[in-house]
Image: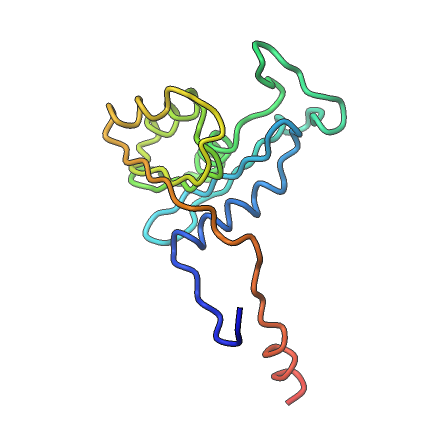
Length: 162
């Protein structure tokens, strides 16, 4: 990229935030991130992780039942729960998620009145798409955004020196 760096679109920005959030995930089976947004403002974030105070998969291994890790709370659920614990409505929000939500997370997003889900990966096959369609929740698939962060450190250091 040259000196005139392209500013990311809002969709790219929020998906990149979801990618960064996914780095906090503690289940090695899947690192997923979710960002709930309304009116271009981040309401909450979530990643795959254990119940607070409980062991993490990366420390004690996954607890697998029916080929799913049951130790973790999924990213979408954690984002919804964060809103709930802070008294923030999720109504008419947009969920930016790194992966296609599982069927249960899709149902939770629908019940939370999320109006749109934006993803870049159809990691696994679920009934999510069917549930979103019948519930009127818009599903958009975008290309994965660039994973690099273009922090303009040179401008910062020239201001500091000047």
